[in-house]
Image (cartoon, rainbow, N blue to C red; front, side, top):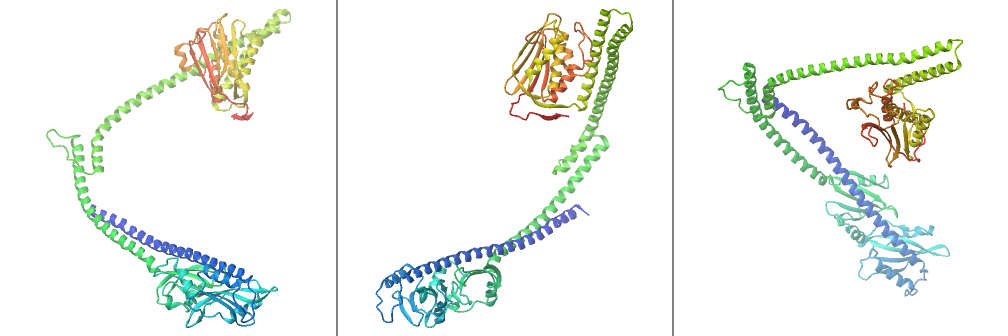
Length: 609
């Protein structure tokens, strides 16, 4: 296939799924519109039903207050009573009412109060009035009453009690026109409608074409659905065959039903406009995409031809021949990138050769480092042999002396001291080897707890003084409390190794100063001496294993592991250790810095493992 055919297929592969997705989206949009419409209708009927219930409740309370003032008078009695004034006042306060009537349960209307000029209402059904004979507490709302030419009406009634028993009924008559005015206050515009039905399904009021529908029953499909619950929404068809969204809510104060509906075509119109716009955009996008595919295929074909020329020129001579025109510029970034890569291929070969040379040089250095490591291992073995031979020779000699039967007591004591000193020296070397091994493989263990570093340092100094290990020096101790979280035995080992190192390399009569200071965030241990200091070439690897200075006066041997153990132990405690020259005493200075803690932190924590 040619490039143009591939691009056309690509356009079809994009447009067809897009059209399908658009159809699915429009279908979902139609469903969402329907859901939003029914939800809006449900909220409307719930609000209107609540307002109607409030009107009925208010009417009942007003009638109950009037019923307390009413005594059913004898027929023909005067009507200018407190009840008359109260009834007329209620009519003024309740514009929904058209008439107030007092009915005796033994027959006849005792009294009727009405506003001048209001239309005559259809009279209350006698069966409705007689229903109050059996109740003394509840109120009753009537269904729609029709008696042409009187206006259709509904009645709200409460019993009038005498000696705890109902003797009369007080009714408030509300005309269908008043209920229509009440519904129209919600501003329902055609073709939507708001309808109030009585318990039998007859329409009391309807905002759309009220003259045609008041007094008629609602359609069976609608009314049957309202019997299914207190409230709900559904789609149904009107009498003229149009699909409607409908919602209803049953009144809490009566068995009336408030309903509202609107044609589905209104909601679908928006979806239809969106569908037309989507189809138009898809067609336009397809045409534009096909046109662009044709133009781009021509450009790609030309670019590929230029790229082939470039590759041929590189393969033929490795570059442009003198006097030939440079390759023409290609307007496609990707193809130009390939052209640049082809031009850069030769330079990449040269760079690769250079890198291979450098890699060979690095390999040579690595080999030299490996050979140096092997030499260091051989030197360590030789040094270890030498360091072990001296104490072993001394132990052998002392053991031979102790084996003699006629050895004087002072000679025996001297030989015992030699054995003790040399065994302690061997133990120290073995302990250093074990410590550095455990630390290197991560097997060192310890219990971390808050402790005072100054107390640890003071304890180490006391041990040195008791063992006469620093009698040949002037040892100055200046410590202040500094709390850290650490393992006491390991921190003692750190202080011991640093102090022993200072005492070993400081000549007799010299000075060694030990201090502990806390600054709130850190606790710092400093051990300084006025010895010869540290050789500059020794500083970079001072804390490496088996590193030793060669110019210490009165050297007593060792494997060069003390400072390496110090560094690893300090790092396990989350601290740092540094060494340098030129301190206050002019010699070497070792500084250990640990994080300070407060005494409120947990006392112990397993941390080194």
